[in-house]
Length: 311
Image (cartoon, rainbow, N blue to C red; front, side, top):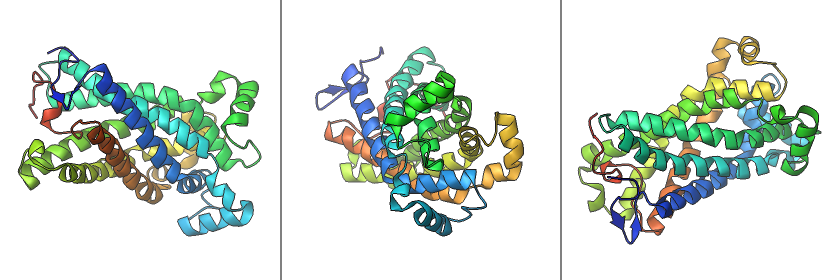
């Protein structure tokens, strides 16, 4: 079956250009809004990574930020969060759907886990190239109060002093953080959806109401976010260190942070932060799909007929 020849659902053809457009817009809106909502916690997280002695816990760290810089400090970098992660989310979700069908055509003998891994990894590589400049400005704005007010003055300042390399300094660590996160997030989500329908609900997705389907989306979404966070935490600490000049390269960052701290520093906050964020992303994303007449994500009915469904 060629791409774009999937079954119809309320007039919209799955794997058609219109389908990918809905997935891309849904990804942009869901990722951008959820990341914007948790900007205060992200500001704290980045400062805990860069200055763990000063910002050593959630409550004391928030208190220090507000005392020293005022309540507005909690919303530093909101533009980078909203626009950067909006662009990343559009690429990530839209391209994941595209490459899932693409690899299904190309690798018809492979099992579905391979399709999930390849699709999410390919989509994330592109998504992080789009995100990286926004992330470079966001981290500096959040941790260096006198650096810039936001994206508008931050972009020209970095480009003028460091060139394009300054905007992409953290690309490889960003891939190191987001590639394993994305691969585990999508794979865990897809398998969790299958498990919930087959073992818990014991009904096909199409036999469940839309509210039940969205409930499955939330449960699978939280599981995918929690697992992805644990694996991606070391690279997240490295990204913060590089952008704040705490280290000149990845190896130096690892040495200065310490192996144990790579895995544990800011991890409780990230789990608190990322689990609900990923859950809300999946919920918003699937709600948009439902409102446009598409089925929710995951489950065996979301693949072309020729996909090998071996475990």
